Structure formats: C-alpha cells, structure tokens
Image (cartoon, rainbow, N blue to C red; front, side, top):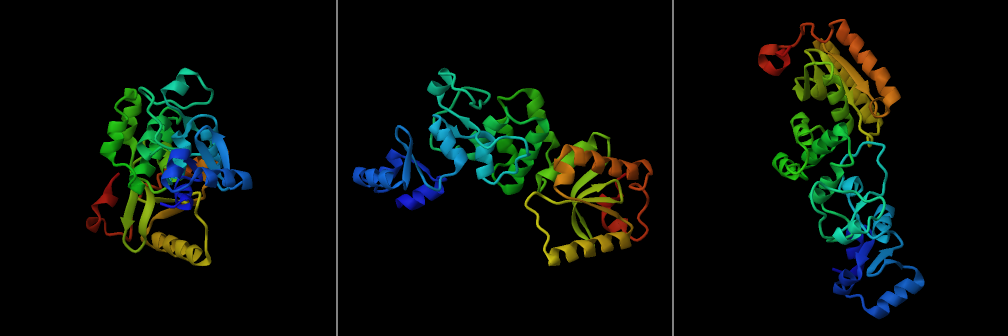
Amino acid sequence: MDPNTLLTRNHGVASWAALQKAGVSRTDLRQALHTGALTKLRRGWYASDRAHPAVAASVRAGGVCSCVSALRLHGVWIPEGYGMAHMRARSAAHNQRLPGLCHRHGRPLREDGAVDDVPTAFAHAVRCLDAEGIVVVCDSLMNLGLMSRDEIEVALRSSPRKTQALLDKCARSEAGTETMARLRLRRHHLSIQTQVQIPDVGRVDLLVGRRLIIEIDGQEYHHTPEQFYTDRARDLAAFRLGYLPVRLGYRQVAVPEEWTISEEAILAIVRRGEHLAALPNADLRSNPALSLP
C-alpha cells in the first residue's frame, strides 16, 4: 500500500510504523514535514494536510478517535448534540486521567490505530449516548449491516441490564429520525409498524394503527423534482386507498421544539380515532399486517 492510500484509508492520520511499511523513509518524512504535507501530532504519529479534524485532534491529545465520532466516520447515524471529537485511550492514558476521554464498560483496550473499528467504537458510545440515542445507533448498525443483532447483544453484555434491554426496542429503521419518532410515539401506547409494504403505495416508514402513514426525511435527504413528484404520487395513492399520509422533515423530528409541534399534530389525529378507521379501499385479507388494531 502506498503512503497516499494509507493516509486516505486512515482519514489522513498514520503512525510512523505504518508509514515505514508503506515505503516512507526518514528522508521522505523530513521532507514532508518541511513542506507541510505532513504534520507531527505526537511522538510516532503524523497527519496529512487533509486529515479529518476529529481524528487528528484525538491522536494529538494522546488518544484514538472512538465512540460516536468513529461511528460517524463508519457511516452510522448519530443524533445531534454529540460533539465531533470523542476519543478513548489505552490503559496508561486512562491512568493519567487525561480529560475528555470516553470509557467503555470494562477495562480499556489497546490502541490499534487512529480510528476505532465499529464494535470498539460502539462499546464506548454506549456510555455517552442516552437511551434513545443507543436505540438509534443500534438500528443504524443493523440497517447498514455493520453489526448483527447477535453481535450487538454480545457487545452489550458488560453493560447494565437496562441498557441491554434497549435492544428489544430496535427495528432496523433506515434513518435515525424514523427511530426517534417510533420510540416517542410508542410512549403513547400506539400500535406502530415499521417499513410496511403497501400495495400501490410502496414501503412506508411508519404505520400507526390501520391508516396513519408517517414518512420521515433523513438528514441527508434532498428533494429533486423527480423525488418531489414521486412522493406526492405516493401520497395520492395512499389517500385513494383510505390512508392518511403525513410527511415530516428532518428538523420536525430532530429539533425538540419542532417535534413538539409534530407530535401534537399526530396525537390530534389519534385522539379523533382517525388512525383506527377501517380502510374502505384496501383488501386487508391480502395484507394481514394491515388488520392490526
């Protein structure tokens, strides 16, 4: 592996040992430091001029990019409100009581690189995330195929029982906002199904009762003219069948003040009993899941 590939794969940060294996000599290193192509972070660790800020900051401080920061780099959906530079360190650094370190349930692990792998990062994130955040992350891990339910269960074995029990609330949602809405609405003891396939409509994010469809845009969602048209066509098809489709944007779920408004609108429909009315134009016998109360 050449040095550029090595640095790219490691978010712009690499150890001197890894750079040597990639063919970098001491003369090459001195030249790179002189030109600014590389910067010394700490003894034995270097960053390119394109290094990820969270990774460079973690290594510079004597740690490893871990927890929610590492999970973000692996593509996992992380709720808002958690800073960019979460890090952990080996036993020696923990014994020095360096500030700002994330911990796992159990003894500190050895450092294997600048960024932790998914299971190690998740083990540390469990102690930083709140209950809703843990379920959001677990849903994302399973949806992306980064960890199976069994692997998550093993990773949580050293955690408190109340944390382990959160796995029962997971449902492989495609976006964190979907998980957040599902968890919050279930506090009202509503019957909610996820990723339901409805003939002539397609797969919907949430189905509350018999009729109330809730579709939620993720943070990365961007409307194109074609997508805008497709979404409205799906809504029309749902209306024709007797469903009540509601669309929520990212902020309408992720921002607490916005969610208060969204939740009240949904609960108004529920209080009127509209989510439980029979479907006049849907063949429930061909789709038994839709007959749930």
